[in-house]
Amino acid sequence: MTASYRTHRFPPHAHDEFAIGVIERGAQAFLEGRGRRLIMPEGAICVINPGQLHEGRPAIEGGWDYRMVYVSASALLGLVRDADGAPQRSVHFPDVVMDDPDTMLLFRTAHICSESHDASQLEKTSRLTTAMTQLVLRHASTARRPSIGGAMPGAVRRARDYIDAHFVDNPSLDVIAQVAGMSAYHLLREFKKSVGVAPHAYLVQRRVALAKHLVLRGVPLRQVAIEVGYCDQGHLSREFSRFFGVPPGIARQ
Image (tube, rainbow, N blue to C red):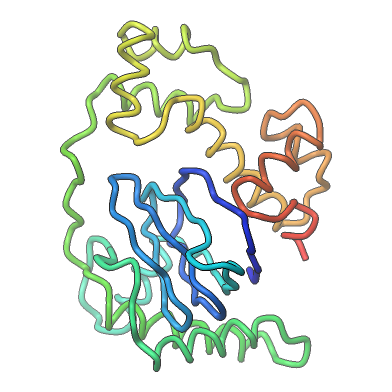
C-alpha cells in the first residue's frame, strides 16, 4: 500500500497483522493506546505489532507519505526459522520507530519493485523476503512477548470472542453482556479497560479489517459491504476511509 495523507486522522484501531512501513515524506504522529506518543519521521522504518492499539495523525503541516505492507505473524516467524534454523515461539518488535537506513532502503526498493509490471514475481518475492528477514533479525525479539496490562479477564475475553464470531450480525450490547456474564454497564467499563476501545468500536475494527482483505482480493464492493455487515456500499466506504484514509476503490488500486 502506498498513500499520502495531508490532514487525515486515524481513529484508535489495531491490526491482525504486522503493519510495516517507511515514511517517504513528512512525518506522522503516533499515539499508542496506552498513552505513549511518538513521531515517525521521514526515512524511518515503522512497525506496529498485531493487536497494538494506536492512532495516527499529521505531525507537521502537509502530513506524510508512506509505503506499507501487512505481514502475518506466522510469515515473519517463518523467516526467522529459515534464517537461523532455531525454533521460535513468537516475533515482537519492541520499538515502533527504527532508524536503520540500510534496511529502510531494502524495504523501499522491494516495495517499489512490487509495483512494477516489468519485474518478475521471483524478483518481487526475493526482494521483499530479503528486506523482511533483515528487519526481523536486526530489530525483532523472538522471546515470548510479555502481556501488557495483565491477563484479559475471562468475561471480557468471552465478549471479544463473541464479537469476533458475530460482528456481521450486528449483535446488541445486551446479548454480548449475557455471553460475558456481567451487566452491560460493567462490560462497557471492563472491555475498554482491557481492549482499549469500547465494544462498538471494536466491532467496527473487525468489520473494516475483513473489508480490507476482501477489497484487496478483488471482491465487488457491493458484495464486500454485505459480507461485513453494512447496510449499503456508502456506509462501507465511509468507515473504510475513516480507518485507512482512502475509499475502498482507491485502496484496491
